[in-house]
Amino acid sequence: MREAADFVKAKLPVSAVILGTAAGDKVNLVGMASPDAVKAGIHMGKVISQAAKICGGGGGGKPANAQAGGKDVSKLADAVAQGVKIISGMLD
Image 1 (cartoon, helix red, strand yellow):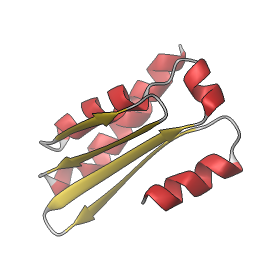
Image 2 (tube, rainbow, N blue to C red):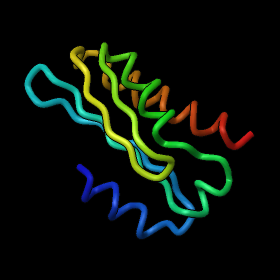
Image 3 (tube, rainbow, N blue to C red):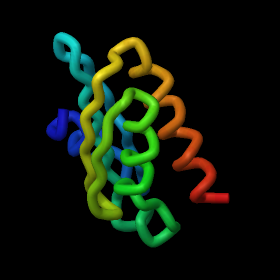
Image 4 (spheres, rainbow, N blue to C red):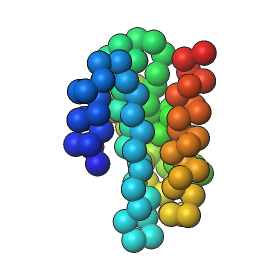
């Protein structure tokens, strides 16, 4: 999943990417932001931390890279959607 996020980030010079997957009964979230997105105020550690709470998990990281896990796969889509909202709010 990190490779997929790296791929998207490389194709979009100014980007913030949040990806999620379910493996069995576990959720994995990855977030990455380009240097320009970080300069604009994005902090993926904060984004991933808040998104993971929706899935009953936790995690974090640095402004440019973060990852988290969770326990409730039924909330994966909600967690990713919340991550997108948080990113948008950081740019306002």
